[in-house]
Amino acid sequence: MDNEIICNDPCPIARSVAFAGDAWSLLILRDAHAGLTRFDQFRKSLGIAPTMLTRRLATLTEEGLLEKRRYSEHPPREEYLLTAAGRDFLPVLFMIGAWGRQYRGGGKLVRFFDAENGTEIKAIAVDEVTGAKIGTRPIRTVMPEES
Image (cartoon, rainbow, N blue to C red; front, top):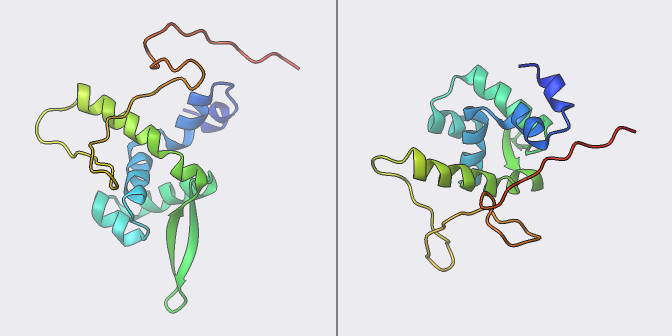
């Protein structure tokens, strides 16, 4: 798959999966939302090879979902913090999780709760304009006009 071609595709889904569509990137974002910020924390949580983790963190940083911040000068060490774009990715992760719970759910699964009121989070995607649950009504795709 040629990411440069996909990044120029008029479809926002194609553009998004070009950099965040692999499992490692999604799991790094999941862990960042859980409070992990340091390379060794991600590596321990994911069991990912250091070279792979370095590439994924670089891509997520270049794409603006994470930002690097130095937390130690001697030795030089950096941490990865969610940006606004990274924080806005949380509902996407929850929707993937909701799909996984329904279609890939066997055995014991992690549950997510609202920290303030203690209720379990049950994610659904709703169209902001109509209020309809996405997937309950037909969709139509409209290509951008040539300029």
